[in-house]
Length: 165
Image 1: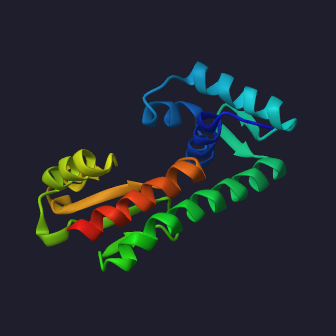
Image 2 (image 1 turned 120 degrees about the vertical axis):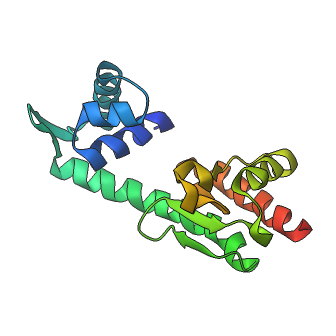
Image 3 (image 1 turned 120 degrees about the horizontal axis):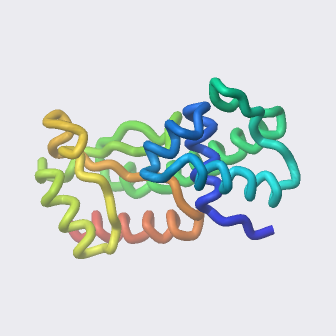
């Protein structure tokens, strides 16, 4: 079975927020698209993932199992991304209970400068920490949302990037 990765990403956010409209806002999408995506995923999996009500959505037992599996998958991706950071002594937090890793930019580089250098030299997109406010300056965020093959390739590129600096 080859299910569209975006279905799982949307499922994750709907499950996290318990509300399709909130998830749609966060994902810069709309409620009808997310509802259609969830129905498509349920059809592909041949199960009901959510119980819907006017207050939002709740996971069914099948939905809870699928969500645990998905979270485990993303945390596995986070562990893959953490390896080159650990290897090169880059301080970071996260990745154990969330699919995001927040890391210090090497040599106190500015977060936008680091973003551009990482993108230009390694083809890796991170989120500059300054996008989260002044306290995020000199930090960057990596996301573990992705296919295992893509995340593994990004971790290998990240390792080579840190080898060069």
